[in-house]
Length: 388
Image (cartoon, rainbow, N blue to C red; front, side, top):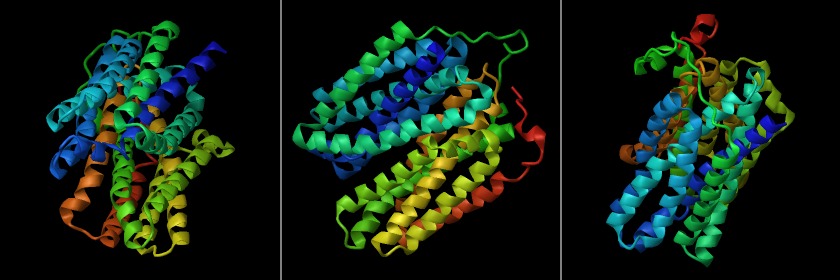
């Protein structure tokens, strides 16, 4: 019973960690401009969080394996809450960039430690369903976060939004300090040896989990960058973009929480990974041809189904391919690929100067190619053997 309570408390931490991320999306660029940032600096302010978050994720992974997830998780929550309060003192663009860097860095400590903790209190045979439930909390944060910040910022201010999130983070940090047991990872003499970084990239399971995380958020970055522009070009207003993103989020959450989540413990994760990334690729191709609201909604529903299958699959792959002694480090790299995928996805198409149709078609093609590659070697049981 207590283990179940702890598991849902970790889910709450995961929810607010991603809620913190998603509340930034609708307001950060306009907030940057409001403190005198040029368009270039405003874009840099948006991307600075993901840039430093990548290093925070990796740093968290190393510390989690060395010290255990408890201290890293508590420190991440308290430091993130404190960093969010700094936005109230931002009056010019240079200080905003500094705050964004600090915020992204310390926020990066939370997720790898939280998922490492979650894996330690979840039975191995339920790791797929557990990944689906954690994905549901992420999906809900993706639905609630942007709407919450957009409404509150319009009625109050952007720093007021961050102050609310800060209070939630600080409360969670104090509760974690008081309630969570200090789980230390016991290592045998054989397991104390140093595991080189290259070992994670030589293991087929972790490599597919990392690349799956990258392409999941690469695709998300493309959607975030291209969809509002595509919808506007078709003559719809900004509310349509919000409704479409909500459709994707709702469908993904349904996949996570309905009895369909049992499939993740019954079917090898490499198959559900390939299915999920294929559906996301198909949705991008559909978007490239979408010229009506019905086709737009169909495309985003397809995207939501793909997202719903992909996230638990890559989480299961990571758990299956690593031992608990190095799982913190593995999750650090895993979420670093998440952050890096967003940056690449949202910036690559702009650099290539592709129109919306070309951008969606290119992304769809890339995702379908990766889906095919992910199935290579799936019959080789050694490919998913825990090598560390």
